[in-house]
Length: 280
View 1: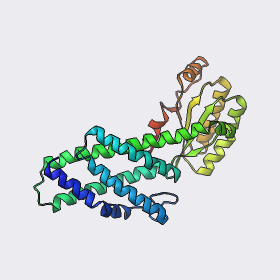
View 2 (view 1 turned 90 degrees about the vertical axis):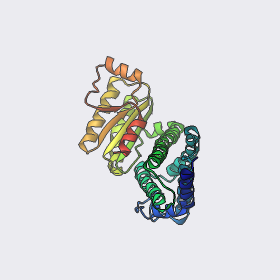
View 3 (view 1 turned 90 degrees about the horizontal axis):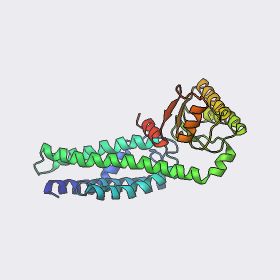
View 4 (view 1 turned 60 degrees about the vertical axis):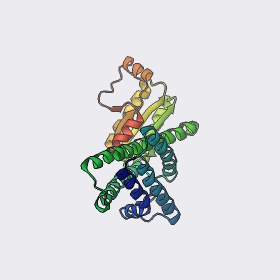
């Protein structure tokens, strides 16, 4: 590592605590969020410690290989994503704070350039930009992947309970809900989706509902009809439906039965649609 990059790394590490204080000053008051400006002291202290460590980990990427950086960041995102799920901090808050962190990070790089006695060239700045932004992008990408993996693993482990409850609407953000359908859906269960889903969607005040069918192994004409009725009813109360995870065998059966999905918004998998929603 050259002298200038080493100096930048040391500057960022030495100023990690001040960085975190500047980051905290930009936080909003969001009820139930780990990031809220009025979070309880024990939560605030944990988030501050995580953030300062995050500053140092990103700084390390200035001299790490890509493989070393990914290994370091993956360990951090695994722990942090788990903490955010436990605290029910939604993904929109994570996305918003990712932007805040990036802006503050570059303010500190700028501060270093202004204060150092070393002669910093434009090439130096662009070299750092490639390293740091690549790392920050990787953090955001892996955080979403880990967050969704933990969430879906929890859902899978509770498959029996979910089936008994018939239609649990899970709030992903303040405006977006997830309805994961798992197992066999007979006519009786399909009809029960209507009242339960409409009620939960209204109570949660969502405007978009992701209907995930990745856990559904078979859809017959009657079940498909009930699902279409559900989507029409959701539309009447102002909720847009996005269907994800249609399995190949389900799609093939739907075609054979003459079921038309052309007027429905569909996505290949849940992870993609979640990424699009929180990056809007």
